[in-house]
Image (tube, rainbow, N blue to C red; front, side):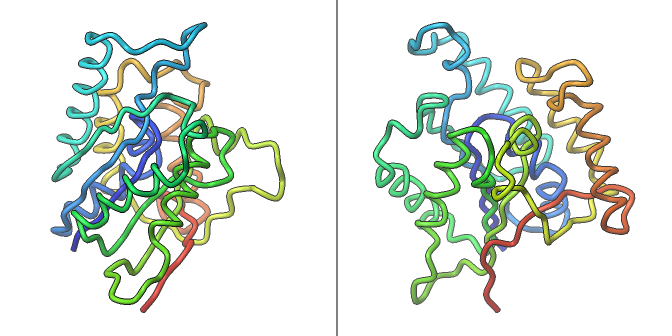
Length: 225
């Protein structure tokens, strides 16, 4: 089975789906990752193109993380960070459709549309447009995942992340955290939510809420059987 993970930024795929990716791979599924934005340029006072050294470092971090989990392929589109809303939505949809056509996935994971980060919202909208239930599609399940340091910072109650599907990652939590350690430029010190300790605690919380020692939480957005 082919599985396709869409992420707005490098490391989102690990924070939200890392344990589930490892579980898919262990079960023999082929997992592919597509990261849309470069994830760095918005941190500067003024926007400018990333220099080659920063790009290469970020690429190597993604490569290391994906290799650790056994991801079959990954693509970096390197759209401008925190500026996906400045692009025509159709352009983003077309890129996503191209990868869906290439991979032919049965399951898709995407960012949650209610996150505080605008790129996450755009990716969600684009994925939902690209995965509309047309005849002859192979897509059976579309899940939205949380991203620590974005999902929980949403201030709007109506957009609150309310998971209805949980994946047991008891046997894959350490793999997830090992993959995240490759993203040295993204990690922060605890108690920042984008830290190894926070990710571990979060997995324990979702596990306690779903009857496991550790879990990842998702919203089932669309499913057919």
